[in-house]
Length: 285
Image 1: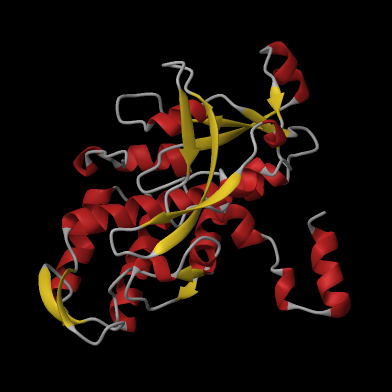
Image 2: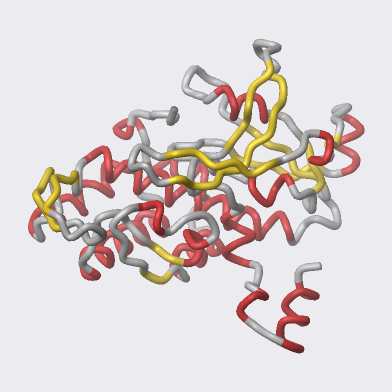
């Protein structure tokens, strides 16, 4: 279940409180994304999302560019959702990417009825990209401070809209280099509002926090079936819900089993061979 918020309640002050006035690393993460034209969102999953900007069922590059530019402006100017949608909706309507339409399915070659642009879709696009960009920028900043703050703490928004699995992660502390953060670094799904904060050795002792190791609760990959019939891999592990005391399975949403910051900022050593590949690996050891 997604954590739904009221888009109308998001103000410029709220956005600035999260991003600051002009967070250069957040903007850089978003601007370095290329374009990937896809029919189904699951065609671009996990780490690929950090390198390619895509919106499902946008098959025209100019429309993808319009959405990308609107998000770029929203991040740079700390625009609230209402301002973002007020500027983008007329453009999408003018170009015909709005409402429910009969279109050609690029995968099957059949005519099918699909939902293109809508306020709800724009909210999902806005919220997911803003959160991913922020967390990627935050990752870079926290990595630069691991000499003084080597531990990271998972922080969930503890209200009635928080998913049980995300609530179960609230307050957990792992070292920055624990494998846990490779797949459970937020956002963990659509409309996820979780974040991570750095913790020093002194704070760990003062607050009597315990640093965990992911090996104590083995993280595994499992396949789940989507409504479309496609099967995708997600990461999961079993733990105890601190609120209910019951055993639960914590897992990411499909397409979110990755760390957006690590995927965006660390080099992909698999693209290179020889000395260059060795250098790429050494850079992030």
